[in-house]
Length: 239
Image (cartoon, rainbow, N blue to C red; front, side, top):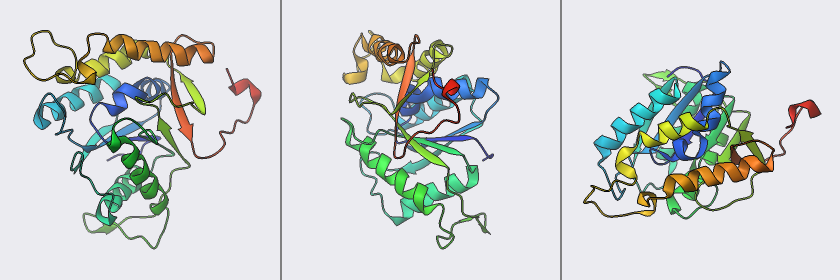
């Protein structure tokens, strides 16, 4: 794992693409670095297999241009948020040493999303404590706490604390989402339906992005919530 500016942690493969890909691609376009960690393989998903979703995640990561993509191998639907899992996330944070941590919505329709948000928040705090010891390849890791942690918005309509302009990267966001071909509408599929397999699902994604973008005077946007005030050094930084 390389050191990165932004580390995005999502509980299921495709969470990050659906909610934050535009932001991450924009950061990479500006010369920044991004890493991704998927906590599970999404093995409880209605369609596809864990192996297929790992392959799709790899393809999506290449489309976005991320520095790395790892999978923690937690149990989809049944991860516990215990000490072992928190320390595993701490290892990822300390390895990547990001300035910014992005993760799941603080509450959502899927119970894994809110639980993962709490788990990652706890790991974010613990990663800054020298008394919490973690080792990689036998080497003691240095403490590291990202400056901020932000939560993207998923299924529930949560009022964002800020919105990122993704007008220039929206099309590539959609390309990255569609890399998860097994998860979306397929007229020839014999598998069971899910909320993601609706024929108008992509239109819903576009509608949400247009709605958020409109609120800041741009074409497309992605919204985030923050645990602290969002500060700027100049009013000129604001759209």
